[in-house]
Each structure stands twice: as structure tokens, then as C-alpha cells.
Amino acid sequence: MTDGTGELLFVNGVIRTVDSRDSVHTALLVRGGRIATVGSDAEARAAASPGTPAVDLSGRTVVPGFIDAHNHMSNAAFEPISVDCSTPPLESLDEVLAAIEAHCRELPDGQWVRGFGFNSWQTREHRNPTRGELDEVAPRNPFFLQESNVHTGYANSLALAAVGIDACTPDPWGGGIERDERGELTGTLFEAATNLLQTASWGAYAAQDWDRAVGLIESKAREYLALGITGVGDACVLADTARLYRLADEAGRLPLTVQQLHGGDHFFAAQDLRRADFVERVRGGDTHLLRGGTMKIFVDRAYPDGPGMHLHHDGCTTHAGVNFYSPREVRELAVQAGELNIDLAIHGMGNCAVDSVSDAYEAVRRATGDDRVLRLEHAFLAEPGQAPRLAALGVDLVSNPGLIHHDGMAFDGWRRGDTGIKVLPLRSMIDAGVRVSFASDHPCGTTSPAEIMWSAVTREFYLGGTIDPEEAVTPAEALRAYTINPAHASGRGAEEGSLEPGKRANLAVLDRDPLTVPADQIRGLVVEQTYVDGELVHSAG
Image (cartoon, rainbow, N blue to C red):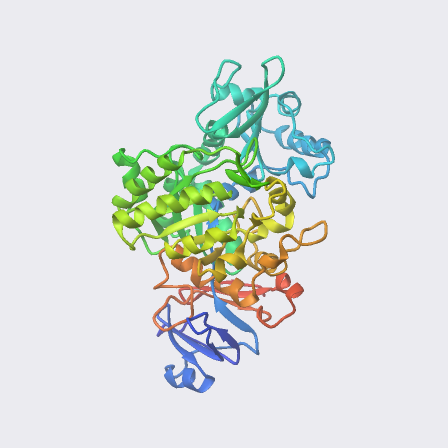
């Protein structure tokens, strides 16, 4: 902890500043929650006040605190009171259904229940539960099971009835309601068709006890601090989500920085920038730890037939997948946001969506100049030839290489044999000059920065082999992609992301140096301490 003068000294270590020169030093002095000096042990000690407490690093490595710029913390926070349907470790659909039944057995009638972590193609049966099966195991409670990627959900009859979805309900904008050959609801909902279920179930959990909800947010944030994460970007904040974050911040129970990427009235809903209440929510006043000013737009969908893709075969180009918006609609919405001084984070998974985002951002730059932060989220399937344009437009790519390990083959299948399209072409993006950030997309994937950096460096698939290994990055690039680059993508590059004098003292003490250990050891990094604004907020001991 800092002393009465707010000073704390770190000596005898490897201080990876991640500044513009990737400088490395042995000591660092914190004063008043900010970096005061970085240099040799002698230089840092000379700058410290007499009696300043010192942390002897004994050769351990200090890096800037990790920033997970695309995370769904407000969803993941409710996992402790939801049904864990994770596959793996659950292997069969029967095990998943048994877990749901055991959870619901003791609950009051009518109480909403959510399930998380389910991946249908990783069950032994390679399928999802039906509405009838969910009715059997949750006969008294509205139940909604989210696919781990959040783009699909499965509901029982009580949940469907609670939000007014029946056999006569048409497919909503941006979504699909699955029906069997008789026209009966199967319980499977795609994309925006899950909106009402997501909002109703999340809202029931939060509104049941707002103080408990604040505690769950704080607890999840502390899990992240134990991984060295000192800042997150919640990648789809709705009105009630913003309320929850505000309550946590006002109560002093938000222990890390949260940037809110604002969605519409529901998770996949279109935003209406003519509404003063929505614009006010997005541009609402920042505090030290709670930030706003950014709007999230979804361009393409994952289901039922994959992201927006241009596929090239035999000299012909065909379109595959489904988009939420036409390129013109994306462009108009993005320009309107830019003119309202709103930064943008646009979700684009396939190469067609990447083109739509690039077109939109070119129009934003023409209309509003270079001041706006413009982010492309994901780019799971892009062409290396798209990278120079993104670089020229100053677009930040916020990518999720941790998903390569478990979902890489699914991404590979979406490109349908088009070898010109790469799965997460990070090497091509960096080489073209695109500023690339890494993020977890949790709960869609692991939250661990160490595992995600390892995945970007090795490109290994969990069943063996690698996915487009030529797109691997170096450990040094991976570290920048989890520190200074996401700081810039979050609009905070001047205040954090590197260990330089004047910046916030957000840092992590690691048990080994991620830039010098063998690549297969990166995923095993242990965060021994985490500091936010110079205060110790996590200690592995």
C-alpha cells in the first residue's frame, strides 16, 4: 500500500512500460495514484520521499493493467445465481437438462431462470434442447438458456408466454423464431428474436434485488482484477444496465474502470438517435471509473446461416449470411452518431460486414474529421486486403483471438473453403498498420488475458492443429494489444495503458515475463498483484 504521501516504490524487477519504444526498466515510483518515475533502482529511490514503502519484485515482471475492451460483464455477473450449463465440462444434453431441473426444483413458482455457458455443438448429441424438454425440467418457471455466443437462445413455454411470443408472432427485425413442420414453436430463437427474453430475464434478476445485483457486479469485477484486468468495456449496455453501473459507482463498489458501449432498448435492437433519452444515456456524464460516450452497432448475424460474407470461387463472388443493416443504413446511422459527438464500436464478423463498416467510417471521417474513436469489433473472417483501408481510416480493431482455441473450426466452416478469407487475420492487420486490441468477449470465451495472448501467439485449436498459423502475432504485439492499444480504443490512451510518468498507476505484477518465456508458458502466467490508481486491489497471496 502507498504511505501517507501516497508513494509506493517498486524495485528489482522487469518493468515493461509498453511505451512507444517498449522501454524496459527495473524500478517504478507511484505517487498520488499516478506513475511518478520509471527508471533504474537508483533513479526511482532518489525520486522517492524518505521512508517510502518498497515492493521488492525479486525479478518479477510489471506490466500495465490489462484492458478488456469488449466484455459483457453485466451478463456474466449474474452467472452465480443462474444455471451453469457449460459444455464442457457437461458432456451430454441429459446432463444439461439435469442441471436445469436441479436448479429450478427449489425456486418459487414464476421466478425467472437463466442458463449460461451452453454450446450445442459441443454436446454429445450435437443439438440444443427443445421447448418440450425445457418444459419438463422447468415446469413452474420461465426459463431462458443462452447459447455461449449469445446469438441464440432456447426458451420453455412459460418464458415464451411471459414475453408474448406464440405461434402467431412474426419474425422480428433482425431475428428468427424457429418453428417445426406443423408451425409450432420449437423454443429456439435467433438473434433479435431473443431480445425480449434477454431483457425480461436479466431485468427480473436485477430488479429482484438491486443491492444484490450491485454486489454481483462488484464480485465479477474482482474476479477480473485477479486476472490483472483493470478496465473493461461492456459491449452492450442497455438502460437498466446503465442504472446498475451507476448504482455500483455511486456506492463505491466499482473497483475498476468500466466503459459503457451503449445498445438500444434491447440487446440486438436498433438505436434511435432521434430520442433525447437515448442520446443522453450514451453521452451521460463520466466519472473517474465509469465512462460512456460510445454506441455499439451490430452489422451482421451469426445465425441461422453465418455472418455477412462475400465468398470468392471460380472467379465469381456470392453473398452469404444475413446482415442486420444494409450498407447505406449502417453509413447513415454512423454519420448521425458522429455528428452527435458519439464514438462508435461496430460489430462486424464477416468480410462483407467489414466492408460495410469501412464504408461507414469513411463517411464519418469526411463528415466529422479525425477526432472520433471508430472501432471495428471482431473481424472473425476478413481478407488481408481489407486491412490497409482500415489503417488509413484510423480504425481500431478490437478482436477476440481467445475464441480461436474453441471456436476456430466453426469460423473456418463459415468461410466455406474460400482461402482468401482468413480467420482473425491479426498478422495482416498489424502489418498493414491497423491498431489491434485483444478482448475476451466474455462470457463467449475465456476472460484470462494470459490465455487469450497465448491463443493469438500459437493459434492452437483445442482438438489439435492450428488455425491460419501465418496470422500469429509476437508476444510483444500481444502485450500491446491488451494494454496501450485498448486504452486508445477506449478513449483513454492519454491516461493509462502504458507505464509512463503522469499516467494512472494501473498495473499488474506477473510471476514471469510474457515476452521471454516459451510460447506455451504464456497461458500459465500468474498475476500475483494488481493495482488500480496505485492501490493494491488483488494479491495472490
